Amino acid sequence: MLRRLYDWTMSLARTRYAEGALAGVSFTESSFFPIPPDVLLIPMVLAKRSAWIRYAFICTVASIVGALLGYAIGALLYETIGKPILAFYNAEHSFEQLAAWYNRWGGWGVLAAAITPFPYKVLTIFSGATGLNLFVFIIVSIIGRGLRFFLVAGLLYRYGEPIREFIEARLGLLFTLFMVLLIGGFVAVRYVF
Image 1: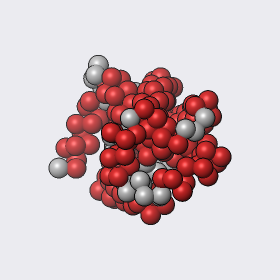
Image 2: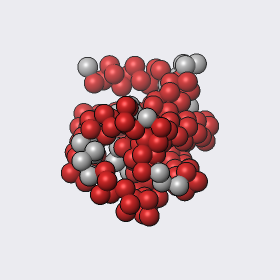
Image 3: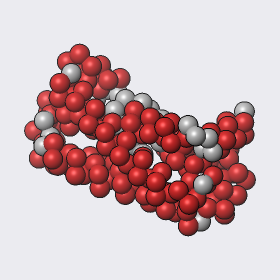
Image 4: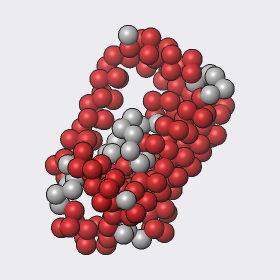
């Protein structure tokens, strides 16, 4: 099953819908969707290495726009939408206690979440709900998301075929590692906030 999913993703990466799907996943992942855009970015770059800059750019821009949606959810819809989403990640209990601290140091948190597997959407919503300076939020999001997606795409461009062979030979192990990191990020959210 995992091999079929991998093959399907690789075939999607070669279709005319790939860039739209990449933008959609990147957008929604920054505000509410749990799956990171890397699941499409990686096979797309491997399928068409010459387009790595374009794909990283699409990821970055769509992710920033999605982050602004997350910020808006926190700022404008915290009570009706933001609170339930934060509750899902068990992040609402410490909200008041963290808000003052976060508005002083939150830019660093957004930057870290933008680069790492930590669920970025939690901090986009939290940033809006606490009123983190929007300019700071946008700048650190551009830096963090750009760094993450251009680094991933650039490494795949540079070492494409050996990485593809490595992935295909160790697909089960890499999927397990990816899931551990993804779930670990959500678990960290429950205990950090």
